[in-house]
Amino acid sequence: MTTEPEIEVTVLLPCLNEAETLEVCVRKALRSLAECGVTGEVLVSDNGSTDGSQELAERAGARVVHAPIRGYGGALLHGIAQARGRYVIMADADDSYALSDLGPFVEALRAGHDVVMGNRFRGGIAEGAMPPLHRYLGNPVLSWLGRQLFGLRAVGDFHCGMRGFNAARIRALGLCMPGMEFASELVVRAALAGYDIVEVPTTLAPDGRSRPPHLRTWRDGWRHLRFLLVFAPRKTLVWPGAVIALLGLVGVGALTPGPLTLGAVELDVNTLVYACLMVLVGAQLAIFGGLAEIYGRQERLVPQRSADRWIRFLRLETSVTIGLLLLAAGTVGTVGAFWHWGGVGFDDLDPHTTLRVVLPSATAVALGVVVLFSGLVGSLLTLRPAHAAPALVRPRTPQREQDTAEALTGS
Image 1 (tube, rainbow, N blue to C red):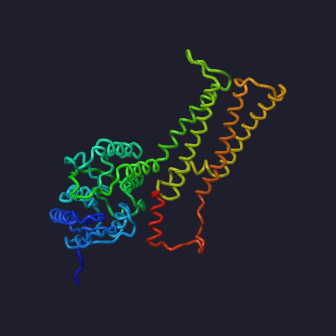
Image 2: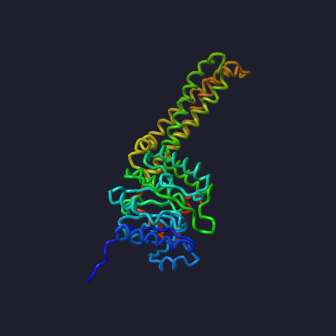
Image 3: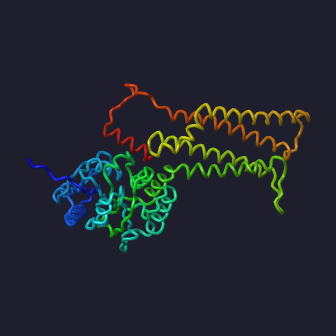
């Protein structure tokens, strides 16, 4: 009885009508695996091609699987699930990536790194291979943002489509994005999980197809940006909100007793209005960020420890207590202002005097309502039933998977 040798590397190619370039990509990858002395396979994850790509891939020596969920991420997710190799090296099937030079990726994966990113800026971008908008604006900006938000100092080309990874480690992340933002999800989720991520130089050649690429600059760029911002609520919502609210509180504290003179400028009730607005806006941003962290924790999208403080703060009992205290303080100020108005026979009042009480009081009331009901939402997010009601459970069908994917991406 003979047994098949264990596959070390799976080269994964997502495919949607790539008949012009798919065969040459498969042959390049197989030749490179042989040159590296690697026992491997080329796996084509087909996304519903109608141009005969499947037959061409099989004829060239690849194994073909059929991805049930449409989209770049959908094809890669299915391919990763079906890969037989210990390591997976993914690349586009448009003959733009260096599939004939898999050696640097294989060496880095064998060295024990969890994720190996290609860097096209270090390896070389051929003339006409990348649109100027992507090369000088889109990729540098999104890569910089990814480094700032997630501490990925070693990643200079955040959106390189050629990358390798330990298959078991990536499957453990539970990736789910079906669109182009899958590229960001893989790197971000790996970084949040503390995986070892490195870069190797790779090259980029002009797309070998005669038709336009599947990538849509503005749509897919926005989806990548949205994903990065949503996955870093602490840096995009909590910290900015806290700073805005703190500055607003300083302004309220300084202007409530009376006008404030700074050199030749006098700040009065008009500035107080904006200071109160800053308190409200900043507090809401911070709370929304906290709710996002709780959601991410409950859905296992971010490390669990990151949301523990918010869970304690936004549990119903705590938020109700804080909310009622703010409401009580605002009510006291409102009653005091009304009492003062009655003391002058409900006649006209000097707004420069009364607004110093009315504005902070109204802000306290509004903030109390926000905190109180945010606690209700936070408590709902942390509810977990012991078991699902049988009547509400539906089987996971391919159509249901696709509906879920479309809901996640807002498409």
